[in-house]
Amino acid sequence: MLILLTFSQNHLELFTGKDVDTVLKRIDSSHNIWLRCLHFRDRTGTAKIIKHFGLNPSRVDMIFNHSPIGIDEDIEDCLLDSYEILTHKIKNREFQVARGSIVVGTGFIITFEITEVKILTTLSNNIVKGTIDIQSWGVDYLLYLIFKDILNNYHTVFDYISRQLDDLEDEVLENYGDESTYQKIARMRQSTRAGRRNFQSIKSLLAIMDYEDFQWLTQPVKELFNQELVHHVDNLSQEYQALRAWMSELMEIQRDSIASKTSERINRLTLLSAVFLPITFIAGVYGMNFKYMPELDQPWAYPLVMVVMILIVIGSIVYAKRQRWL
Image (cartoon, rainbow, N blue to C red):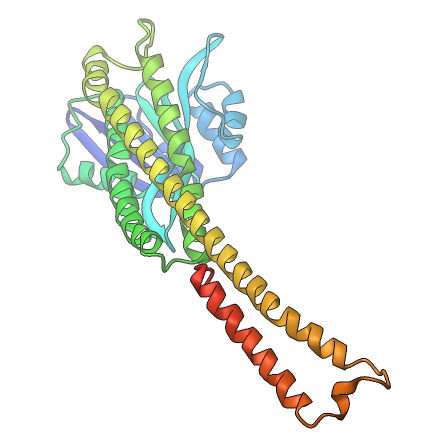
């Protein structure tokens, strides 16, 4: 699916199509362009798009290989950034990771979305509805809006993580969690690793934007990035690290709790074995087939041995309780 948004001072149009050639024919270079390629893994079609915008053919491999930020001093045709975004579409306490690439050139932005990014769909809809005024700006301002919405999305994700960790913390600290509780926390921690990579990628991109010869941003938009997004991504990164530390702490407490419960079970089994060891010994002695065992002929021998066994069990249990082993 291809979604083409063209805009300029007096023009705003949205066009959707599946055929690459049809969409490319509707592109007017006099307007600013945002081309969204959703679930689009056609290498031939991607090559056509890259060629249409006058980019180096090597960009096709970079897009399909999910390369990191791509600025080649020898090929200064665009800015290419690959992303991994934790989205607010959450299933079974796991987070969906949206992957793709953003290509920024003179007068155009192309987003190759392996999985559709809902926040970009919302941004596109708001632009078409006129909720966001973009017609007096260029594509660099659109890039700013994309990164702003990506970062704002993390507030929803982090809020959900916090609420889930509150519930899991109750399970852990009130000691009614089990191995499944540990697995829930572990899966949550593992599924949020993409957030770290995303923040690192955005930080690298923001650092590159500070270069004086960075040609893809006008000065007003560069000031917006520096004034709003630099501190925003730093704060979110710190919040992310705090949540990861919280998960690690809960995992450590739950691991200790599981180990303590396991040790307690082993101690009980050991005590049970110790209680029955002397009884087993007595039973073994009287189970030997010797002819001359005087107790065998006594009528009180059997009840006496049973009483002794019972006293051993009772005595062992009382001793264990006094020692606080039970």
